[in-house]
Structures are given as structure tokens and as C-alpha cells.
Picture 1 (spheres, protein in one colour):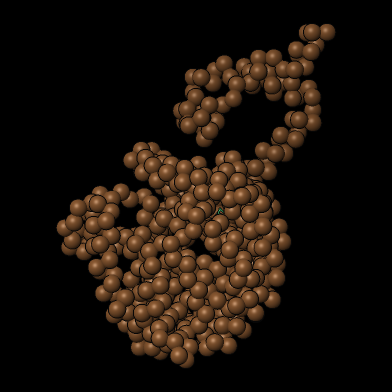
Picture 2: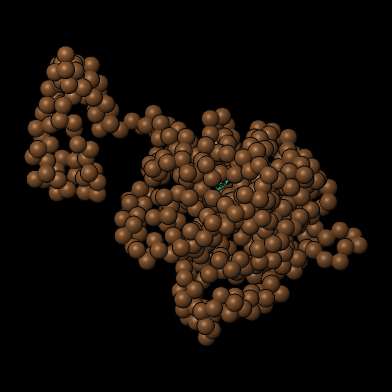
Length: 464
Ligand code: SF4
């Protein structure tokens, strides 16, 4: 069986050599940076806005118990059924239970990364239900039987030619590859699904404690149709989505749009506060909210890395990450890829099995710079590395550091090793980059820094 680290290395090796794939990603993200920077410049003080967003999330997460209770009490008062799920399995069982009780057959879904996290589609299909993604990117990757490539742009790795071929094959369409025509093909299929679906399932971008409302922000209007047309609505959200006040959205909606897509504000911003109330003409008859923990409380208990829960899933850290841009989203083998995925996945799925993700970083700090809620991602990658080494030290590393300390504590030996290194360097060229090279792991793709011809001490002695 392939382990996560083997899978990462194998796929990264293939994709870093795949110039077509790299070209698609570079083109998509090149445009993103230009638009995002233009929108950022329209803020009076973007850095002050980041600071305020970070502090608000700090307040929400550090008082999560209080804000979650407040949020749930308000929702329940309007007739929402709230369910608490400690694990992904529990969340799947709760959702399956609701669907079975409603004798539903088909489910329409809007974008929800939490549902990817708990592999909900597989569970629903396995139980015999039809489930259709209504976000265009998610719809495309669902047709390809793939996981989303990116948390905001699920089909970023595909060209319009790829999508045309997919639609021709899977939907029997015969359109051109123009984005407008392709969108119309998907639209015709999806409209029918909205009308016939028994249950609508959504995620949530924010949960407002003050008013007991879910905020969903989107560009296609598909989440609105998902929530409005079926008789039963289910929202699945992680417990960390809470914001204290309604007014906080005035900051968070533009911050999310700017960092995520470079827009000043996303096209559709909707609040959901429960099922249809007496006298209202539309909305679901029944509304269920499933609150997912799935080891988030373990991250909450870690005071050092708790701010990993501040993430608003804008995807900005993925967009600027040189590793993500080269190896792509699927290589990570996780729901959350890129820097934030590398930080939180070891917490959510096990440190030892996923520690390699914390090494898939150049530590350039671009992710930390880009994060709209000021999570120090680069620093957390180092925390993960340290924790992994502390929990299960590598014998090789331990021996190497002992040897290092032994040599560095003995000036005579240090000088001798330096001299031997300089002699070895002369002959290194003969085996460099081959299997005979003792530093092959490094030199197969990189140069070893040359050892100086003369040490500082030698130079000083000569000078005086
Ligand atoms: S860590 Fe920051 S930049 Fe990355 S997705 Fe979350 S909010 Fe966005």
C-alpha cells in the first residue's frame, strides 16, 4: 500500500516535470495576483484590515464555547435542528439519517470543503442516493471522479478544451469550448437537478453568533438555489466558522473576496437563519445544521497553533506558494492542500503520517504574507517539524547531530574535517549526481555549496 509520503513524492516528481500542467497553473495564478493587488490597493489600509480580521478571529476562537452556544441557541429558537458531530463518521451518519427519514432520493449540493473532508459524497452514493455538485468547478471534478484541486478553484488544473471533452463524453453535449457555451451545458443539467432534488446540502463561510445566521458567499447563485428549492436543507460546517457579530461581515466578506479571487466583493452574499417562518413565501420547510469537530478541538487545545483555526479558506496561501504552484493540489493527497493544509492536516489526520507536508515548503514566507487573517503559516510548519521530531526522533538525524556536536566541540578535529572536505571536493565532481555520490539525495537536483579554499582562521593567521 502506498503511504501518503510515497504518494506525495511520486506525484510531485511527475508533476514538476509536467510543463503543460505547470503552464496552466502559472497562467491561472498570474492573472489572480494582478487582480488581487489591484483590489487590495482600494482598501484605505489593507494591513490594518488584516490586523483587525486576525484579532476578530482570535476573539472568536478563544471564546468559541461562548459564541457557539449563542449561535446555536438563536438558530434553535427559529426551529433549526442542530446536530453535533465529534467525528467525520458521526457527521456522515447524521446526514444519512436525515436523508433516510425524509425518504429522499436525490441531493443537490453547493460547495462545502467540510463534506470533502468527511468523504460525504462517497458515503451518500454508497448508500444508493444520487448526489450532484452544483458549483461549476465542483460539478466538473465530480464528473471526472476527482477531488477538488484547490479549495477555491476546484477545476483550476483544466483547460476549457479539457472541459469540453469531458462534457461531450459524460453529458453527450456537442458545444464549442467557449466558457459561455460550456456554462450553459452545465446549467441545463443542473436546473433539472435543483427542481427534482429532495434535499439541499450546503457548507458555510461564516456563522454569526450574535444573530444565529449562516453566511454563504458565492459567485454562481448555485448555493441560493440549493438552499431555496428543496424542501429540506442541511448545512455542514466546521465549528471554527463562528464570528461574534453581524458587523464583522463588513470586514470579512471583502477580505475573503479580495484574497480568494481578487474581487472587491463576491456576487451573491446570503444569510440563512433557519427554516421557512410563518408568513414567509419561500425557503426550506426543514433546516438541519451539522456542526463538525473532527479533531478541531484538539487543535484548539494547542495554544501555540490554535490560530490555524482562524483560517477562512480563501486559498490565498495556496496561490502564492511556490511548492503548490509546481506540484499542484492533488499531490498533497488531502482535502486542504498548500500551506494551510500542511499546517492543519497533521493535526486533523495524524502527525507522523502527514509530517512530510511540513517539509514541502521552502519557508519563503509568501503564505504568511498573503494570509488575510495573519496566520503565521511558515512558523507553524516549523512547529510541526519540531513536534514530529520530538515525538518520534529519527535515528539518522539524532546520530548526525551527535556527530556534528562532537566535531564542532573539538577545534582540531573540526579543522581536520574541513581539510578533508576540501580534498574530497576536488574528487566529488567524478561521482556528482550519480548513485556513487554519498550526497546523491541532494546533488541529483542541486549543487552542493563549495567549501571555501581557505578558512577564516587560516586567512587570519596568514594576515598576522
Ligand atoms: S491560511 Fe490564510 S491564506 Fe491560507 S486559506 Fe486560510 S485564510 Fe486563506
